[in-house]
Length: 51
Image (tube, rainbow, N blue to C red; front, side, top):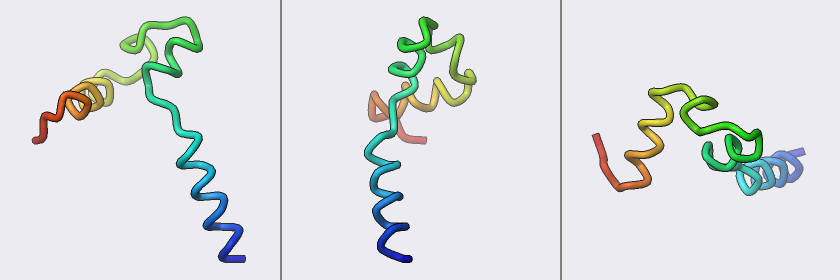
């Protein structure tokens, strides 16, 4: 059903967590939890730096 797919998609997007939040919940530093390239890209996007 298309409505259920849309609802599930919205719920999934709403429940997304930032990498630093997930790392903190697991008791780790973000650079220990997130792949280096992904962590750098996330940090740059938070600063508004575009490639």
